Length: 70
Image 1 (cartoon, helix red, strand yellow):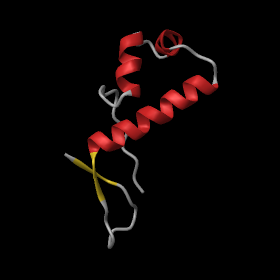
Image 2 (cartoon, rainbow, N blue to C red; image 1 turned 90 degrees about the vertical axis):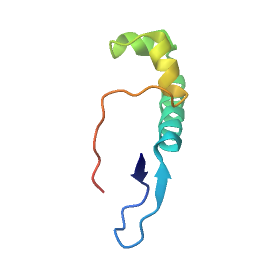
Image 3 (cartoon, rainbow, N blue to C red; image 1 turned 120 degrees about the horizontal axis):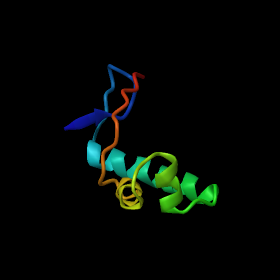
């Protein structure tokens, strides 16, 4: 499975979904820490477990998928 990393149709760069998941996970972790939240607090806010939040931050869990058209 792959996802498109750039929006240009003529110059498409393809990245493995795993790498994208890790990048997103790091951004979620950074935002959580910036807000001063613990994993269990963020999990409670989104109705998920602390372990799920940890998996997402490591790029290993999949939540609801949102399609972003460039």
